[in-house]
Length: 439
Image (cartoon, rainbow, N blue to C red):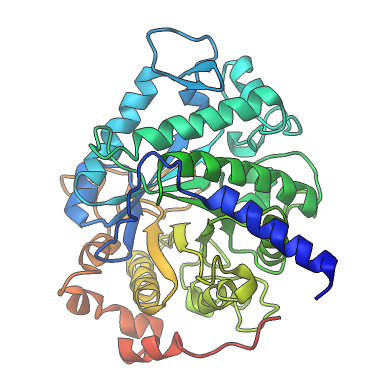
């Protein structure tokens, strides 16, 4: 080993200790365990509890949190001698939702976002300077470029992490923070203007590292996650190469750059939607293969993701990073069998994830169909009142409810001929087929 290489390794080790030390952590809590992998992006709290949800994900909009005007009636947090104020009404709304879930043992993950605000000052503080003025879907990358933006982001993350790590759980508990949304298609979901993959990844790495440092200051166990969608070796086709990137090279570059700056415990929130979001029968996906060059990773070839993340250069202190599936769902096709097909897709996906080591949570999207999703009907419940319910239950509802109970086998039975399986044991064996060696 050359002297230069030895010095580089020593520097990396020192930096790693700096970023991962929990000596100054306020709450030395342990990461909780869940009874199953069953999760939901929750719309209706009472219904989620009735469904037996074990993992819940909630959107959290920093644009509705921060108060640059500094209303002294709002809660505040001091960072580096400066007070930062946060809107009481938004906090109370989030407190009530998070506490209602976590008090019932549900592991809560916060999806941290920066939506467009009607207040130009908020947008200037939060939105990345290179984001376009009106980003698609109203979502911009975080501004951790300017001193002001970086300070607000750090203060916001430290403030909420402290509130949701408290031992008394006065405000509930959150155990995961997903930074942004589907950032490998950033133009649509985390806009930073037109940039190269490397430019975006370096910027995102700074933000994720800052978030991790802020969270680790308050909690010894809460996790920070990257957010990526299912385009693995290709970018999202409608966008250009400066607007979206394949997830695999993005992850490889991010991991390498993180190690160079001092590795830290980042984790992965992945979205293995079917290749066609309007076609729930993912087992027919053509672009999801067991080749290292697979265009997409969907539920069909999900084992490719766990194998990839298990490589030595992607582990942290020798251990695989946590993977959660934080957003994915199945459309209800038109026709008399639409609900059966949707429900069968969930049954298949759940059994596959349940038996696949390396996936910690399967958080379904959506709870209720939403008219603003371009015609997708992904919900456990529909939009049109029927059968005495404001949001009537679809067939998938009962499949979801029983997925991690002793009644699952009887409820799931209808799905086998739709999928083309004789029994669920054959599915379990498929998960242990070793794909080609990754390089």
